[in-house]
View 1 (cartoon, helix red, strand yellow):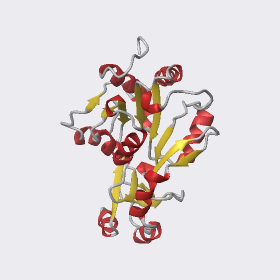
View 2 (view 1 turned 60 degrees about the vertical axis):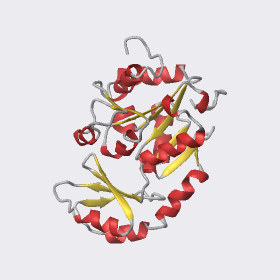
View 3 (view 1 turned 45 degrees about the vertical axis):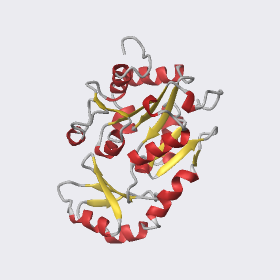
View 4 (view 1 turned 90 degrees about the vertical axis):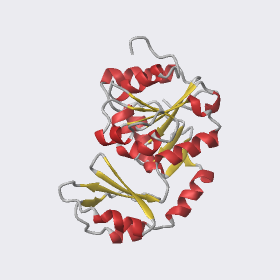
Length: 260
């Protein structure tokens, strides 16, 4: 099933748009919770927009939709905010050049410099995927040497540790938060109709961006701590998909299924 099989109102005209992380958030919770959320989205496509905001690369995201039956998003902010793209009718994605041009300039083809600077660095194992505007590592906390952070900063880039097991090197000033805000503005979506959802530290910039946000009940403790005092964030009790529905209801963003 593809989101583009039937005509729908422009996403900016819909009552509500969910901008959600995947792992632990949209994919989190019980089978029943996920089925309830996904079914509700499909039944309300004329009034509900869907954007995935994730550290995953676009091909993985599309594969999840094809093979695991996730609702198809209309837009994707992938690669920890370094990809901003529209989902096409055939299930492929098309980067939005007007939004990615600045990201590309900030990166400046520094992938080789990053890999050289962190080659063999204690506690970091290079991920095999060749991302366009980021370099990512698996992190082993017990052996990680924090001097990696200064090495990245010396290159004029940003680093991000999430879930205490991933180390991402990103263009300066680029992450999920700035990218989702730029997409929302580009599409003309009223900010009050958007809900951002996440669960780990790589969601921090998105959840603290000033848009309506929910930290689902299974959120990383460090994320919860960093969000302390951020008024735009709702802290859900329920985990994953159920936490998203809990926030939609609590913030009166859309009607949700009874009993959800």
